[in-house]
Structures are given as C-alpha cells and as structure tokens.
Image (cartoon, rainbow, N blue to C red):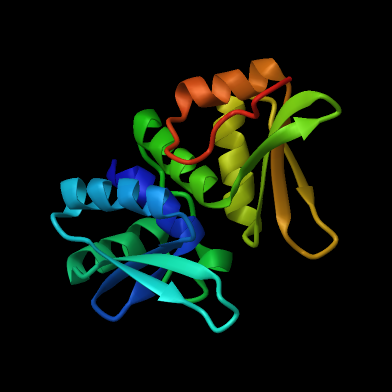
Length: 180
C-alpha cells in the first residue's frame, strides 16, 4: 500500500521539512488513509483545519524524514511537485497501486452521454502520459488531451473500460457512477 499512498501524495500531498502531508475534505477518507499510513509507516497524525471561508480540510501528517526523502527519490522531484513528478518504474502491482492513489486524489466518476466515465486532470504532461500508457497496457482505452486552461486530461468511457479499471485498480474513495 506504500505505492497507493505515493500516488495519493503525488495528487494531493506536499513535502514538509521532516515528512509529508496529504489533504482531503472528507473525514471518512482521512480515517481510511490514516489507518493505511499507520500500517505502512507506523506514524500518522490527522489535523482538522477550518479556513476563513468556512471550508474544512483534514491534513494527514507523516512526520518521518526518511519517508519524505524516499518519496522525493521515487517521484524524482523536490520542488513544484505537481508539475514535475514522474511516475516511478516498478512492478505492475505497484504501478496499479500508484495509479489507484492518484485517481483517488484527482479523478471523478460520472455519466457522460449516459455512459460511465472516469476522468482526471493533472498539471504534469509527462506524468499524465505515463499514467495513460499504464492504463492502455491494462487494456483500458484511455484518452489524453490538453485542456484550454493548461491541464492535461485523462479519461476513459464505457462499462468495459470503467469496469476493467475498478477490477484492477483498488481505490478507497473513487467509485463507479451509480447508473449507466
């Protein structure tokens, strides 16, 4: 599950001086991630933050310098992570964990023209292309495009592709759309 957390971190995390942090607005999701972090790293602390506009964020902290250093090495990045990280080269099972994590951080599942679809946008062209290639290697017809705002979009549509994704990529948050 370390690689799931790495993918989640790549999408919704940031480096701290002596560790890492991952943010979410869902207390239920934060609870699941906290348990996973405790199992994998032996440490995790959740803090609730309320912003001036009233929205809440649950921030999970793993205060371990070795985890921070390992994530920097695995993602080949230190600064401007969301635009510069690379998808680590690893065994298929770990690639799938990584992709599941980043999809939990960034993706949505919805109906498009009455068909199920999963899509996400990243600020990182290379990572988006690498993730798309991993999905294609698993037989998922993934499409890659550049958005007008500068992000890079990945999506796949239809029961066959969406079902194949959820069979091979075990997410905690993301779920197939309810109809379609």
